[in-house]
Length: 454
Image (cartoon, rainbow, N blue to C red):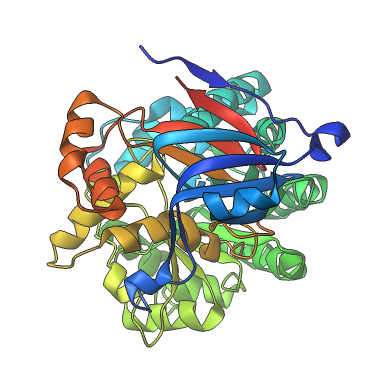
């Protein structure tokens, strides 16, 4: 039985200014978008590489035999039979739904009413929120996720809890108070549109830019916000987007949801237009699901520089529409696209395992998602969605040293099976489609090892 060890990051001044250290092993990273360029041109790969880390950032990366000569006294941790990648980026998930993950649902809206809303109502209790945040972050780290764009819920306590736990690990975390003032139970509903946005701005001022914490203005989705709340949310987002604040919500997930939006907002051209009318479509807007999009909607999101998130496990589990990655990444207007686990609609915390489901969703429509493209979505693609591709998502000098080490011998069977795989992409494809557990050997956040398996 493997032994898992979690450690809070050393963010003291002494820790930040620590000496150089190295991580050695096979290294795989992306330098360009393989949906737009020849796949092999997009990859940075070393069979035996070295990553040199200083003060939480990557100082150098390259072939071990060449690079180590420049650092004769460096302390190196070596990972054999493994591959080192950028830490995974989860572009959409709900930490407050962790206690109800795996609950059955016949439709999205019925599932929300039966399981989601009653669970989220518990997060007014800070102690319950703290307990969930601790368990939630342990699941992220054991699955190699180092950056996450997270939904909390109505209560400020739910936001404080997740940011406090994130701060302990020094994890790059985006979150915000959920705005929802109608069409849900009273014990989860905002007292008023005005008060909800005042609370949100207070949390924004408290947390945004504190260490690696970033804030998102987060209307749940159009049906649970009044026109006034969307208007005020748009004004808040527009006031702070220049300071790196996000807008995070859901879009075009299910047929019955879209019909409901048409009833509530008959003046809008489509679902995307609802958000656009209230100033919620912009360069740091992140839209989850986007399964049932019209071409006009893709054009609007592309023109505004928005990011979209493929949540395959959740869409399969709830029987929603299928995200069409070939539409999202249309070469004439390629939208920034990443992967989301969408816990608790999604049934696991592993971005890597989502890639197996994403492949299957594509094959249902005779569209092949290659290993190169899927791994890009989980790393650099996700960083692009969040506008953070200048600091995470790749293994480059100057980037934050957020890394995941994947075990290439996680089970007896896979050790044998991978002998027949011709290259690293073939090996990783086998592992993502077989859904192996205990895949992650180690997770590093800003150069600190915060998770180790074995």
